Image (cartoon, rainbow, N blue to C red):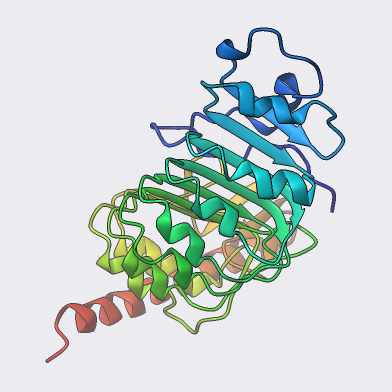
Length: 296
């Protein structure tokens, strides 16, 4: 799937100041810039003939690399002053070039493939926000462990390719995380997958699409974090049953199904699912009791 140029960042709070995806070309470097001192934001692609002028812009803070060349990727590590970086449509064996950009506090990697090791990001000691989308060879996110400054993390795939995640133990190594989001992902951990989230004392929002996880995981998260931190896109709170199209009630959870409102047994089917969801929440409460009191 070709990149949509949509902006899926949760821009509430102070997590993101990077320009929206759709505005990237307003800052194109493919023309001669006269007032280089005034430049703070640029977009560079492999087709740009004048891209090297970025090194003559002393006040550059934000950079988008869209389908960059190998030369551009290798050279860009010199821009150690930049604070915001977006990389899209890149195939690379590693992301070591990012490790040199030590002042980055906002990072977006979209459709970046060929690498699997995230540990170079551990050198970004000022990072506060990360958005991952379609990292084709990444399934283990332990390379994020130790990013004490990270407050926002979203991991996503797309409709045609879901991002695999081996486990969520890495979350324990992000002590100041406040917002955690998941989009089109494959959770490879058995229920309950999100016990590591319980270690995070500052978490205030869990943002997940309504058909991303198994139903039991939603019930567990809602039970573990009851203060309305659980929401889907649009920041609407989770609900066992929701309506996104006329004539149908959808059930929360991957493959959970729906009820056709015109069906004679629609209300019975909806009530049965609500009861099942409540039973999952009861099971979650028992798990949480055992987690809080391991000796009992």
